[in-house]
Length: 88
Image (cartoon, rainbow, N blue to C red; front, side, top):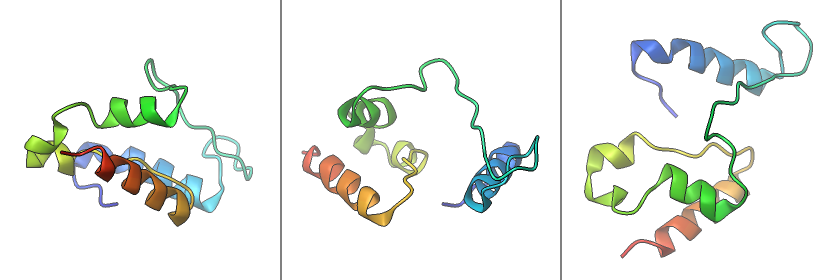
C-alpha cells in the first residue's frame, strides 16, 4: 500500500507502528487504532459493501482510493476472490 497524500503521513506512521507492534502513546507492544463512527461492521459482506459500494468499479479513481487491510495474505486472497466474484 502506498500512501501518497501529504495528510496521510500520520496514518502511515500509525500503520508502521502497528506493523512493528509499538503503541505510540505508551511505547508498549500494543497498538490501539482509533475507531470512528461507522468503522465497525458485523460481517465480511458488510465490510465489503462499506468499502466497495455498488458501482464503485465504474470509476477508476474510486477503485484506486479503496482498500481493505488484512494481516495475512490468505485473508487478502479470500477477500479478493469474494469481491471479484461480485463484479459484473
